[in-house]
Length: 325
Image (cartoon, rainbow, N blue to C red; front, side, top):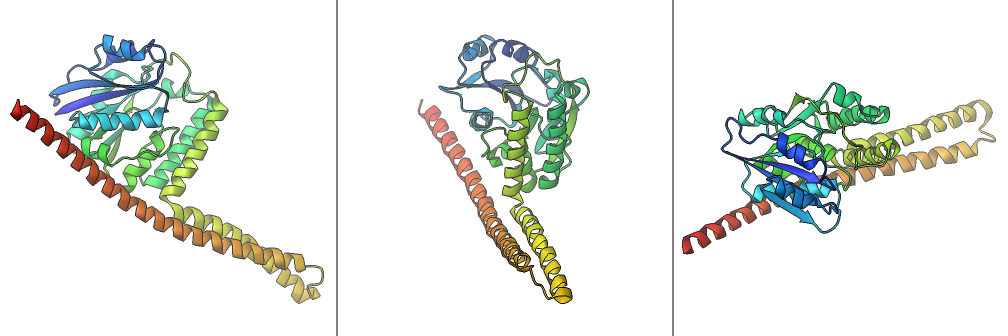
């Protein structure tokens, strides 16, 4: 059983050594542990620091592509390197390396395909108020969209089986945490969560410049992902609200028409008709979006099969070279 711990990095030369040093070198039930750093276009020598710290594999981008892209590239690299279990952690030493054992326990027990480390205590209380509020809102929305009970949807400390990693496809360019949970829930993967502790924050997040930006970008991401995986519910609700408003205005016109002949209220009739038509059209858009979502699920299944075929072909080629040598 091979475990690879991946660490997405962007200018983390100062914090990476402590993060690497805290990670376990051996765990019960694991035959080999390797570390992978994804250097997302760092300019401070992060890759060199990673190699000096004993990291086994480094994937480096020439320019910064964002956390979501780095995370996805890391999963792909881990699978190609033969990982049976993949753990993702942050480079700023936010999560405690000792909790990796707790994180992978449900996977080793065969009860989970994906495990999320749920933060608690001082680590969460140190967040700005806006971030704490959005974390709770985001976690609630994700639970509704994915039919899961993970309490900390924004935690980046999580573990995946090899098969789960193959099935995850991140589209967001901001963060992977919300989208992967919703995908996992909708694909029927077994999700679990376990409480984890956090270290003292050593620097502000580089994912956003301030609380306002975090709130806006996360809210947009949540709405986009929810609409992507629950399009009929989103558009049907919106269409019902618009059509309902038209119905109320139409009833108002009908009241005045029956009691006073409707004189002077023709505008209400026009507005009611427009809202009813628009509401109906929104529902129709929801039906089309739902069909597109169905095609997306088929495309995701095809992509998983393509990845498996590529891995099989790579393995065959490696074995052939070894036999020839």
